[in-house]
Amino acid sequence: MIFLYIGIAGALGALCRYLIGLILFTYAVFPFSTLAVNLIGCYTLAFLSSSLFQKSKLSSEMKSAIASGFLGSFTTFSAFSLETMQLYQSGEVLYACIYSAFSMIGGIMMSNLGWKNEVKA
Amino acid sequence: MSITYVVAVCIGGYLGAISRYSIAQKLNQRVNDSIPYGTLAVNLIGSFFLGFIVSIGLDKMYIMLLGTGFLGAFTTFSTFNNELRKLQQYKKKWLLYFTFTYVGGLCCVFFGFFIGSRII
Image 1: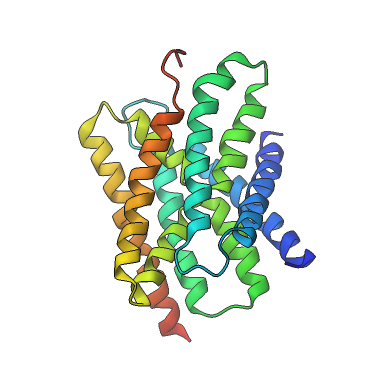
Image 2 (image 1 turned 60 degrees about the vertical axis):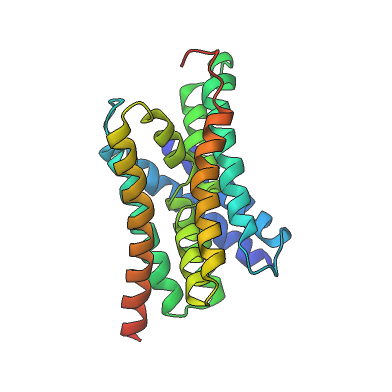
């Protein structure tokens, strides 16, 4: 049953990522939309697992579906790698460096910002 | 946007998330100070195949199904960063996991692209 939940949540996560990609800066050279979903996803996952999930009465299956299914699918690592490579290949080496630095540092920062220490995990 | 792309992304996402979850369940050890090999594996494998399918020049429909849908959902950035945060107190493992994922991911996507462009 857990697989069904994860799958449905995963489908929704991928769909949301796709829709954001359609809306956000479609013609920009710099891949803003992947950066945005990845950073939002990092913050939300840390926030949910440190505070909201601790208080809520959701079943553990539902929590896995949201955390691992939805947010796991919503964020993506393969697109990050691909876009970095494509920026590099099209000669935009500076953009490739900025993009990877923002993803690396931003991901760590957002995860820590979202994590609420006062609640014991 | 057309409805077929939406359906393709959903089907891909459904299967990608389930595949990631089962691989992570098998390979990630449930101890705090261990590198989550399952997540590392899906991210590297996913990067390789995304490079591969982009270089062989598939139809947009298949890119949506396999790339945006399946491989996008199969790989994850949020879980990776959440795991990095958990490893923060183990400096050496943190650095290893960080390096393996980013350097490995970029190498894999280049390698996948290279292999794909050689085949056709």
